[in-house]
Amino acid sequence: MKSGVLHHDDQLIPYQVQHKRTVTRRIHLRTAQDGSLLIIAPRRMSQRAIHDALQERVHNVARFLVVARERLQEIPQLNYVSGEQHLFMGDLRVLEISNSTARASRIELTPTALRIETNDSDPGRIKTLLESWYRAQAAEYFSERMGVYVEKASWVTGEGPSIRLRKMKRTWGSCSATGNITLNTRLMKVPPHCIDYVIAHELCHLQQMNHGRAFYALQDVLYPDWRNARSHLRDKAHVYLAH
Image 1 (cartoon, rainbow, N blue to C red):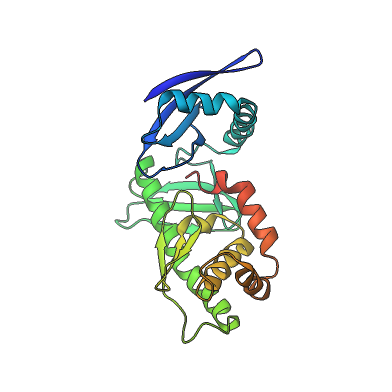
Image 2 (image 1 turned 90 degrees about the vertical axis):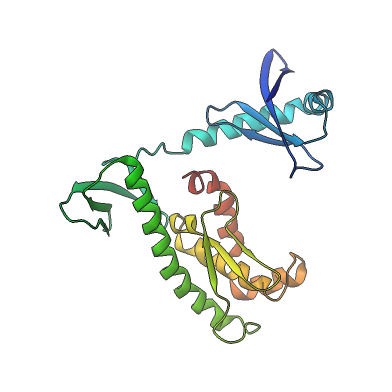
């Protein structure tokens, strides 16, 4: 990757540039895990053009870095060992790992803890177990909540759409032109009202595939408190989507 340095008052802001084919028009600001500035740029954009565009808006870049670095501090560093805290439906649960001689591992959810009994407590194994457990919880809970909102959505016929599950980095859900709804398994970490909002949002796309007035009118009917739920997800997405 190419690099450069911006000048902001008496401060120097180093950055690295990553070109991506999927980025065709605009420069995107990102932060690496160490808090350094990463620029995602169109493949054909020159280093000079990138630098000039950044330097012209250097005050905005500096503000972006301040906010981004503050958010990085909010993200827990998970090592998948006993004693650390993991999110489940908006609440923190203490991870408790105990050894077991049984061949099959077992996960139990309590009001305060996620208890794992396993014969292999390697952190990589614990992470895999947890991700499989979150996915299983998502399959059951999303199906239940989808049924609730399908009954309220007069434009949906039959039992409603099937749900596809994916672990996604930036998207909570999507609805294809053919009516397939995909939901992010990481939603099992957010509060229940936010899960309901995402499900209602995607159901509205079965009737309106854009985000025009007609879409928001449907959303007002199906999930009137959608603005608060959307605001929460936007404010805390960096925490919920981090792991």
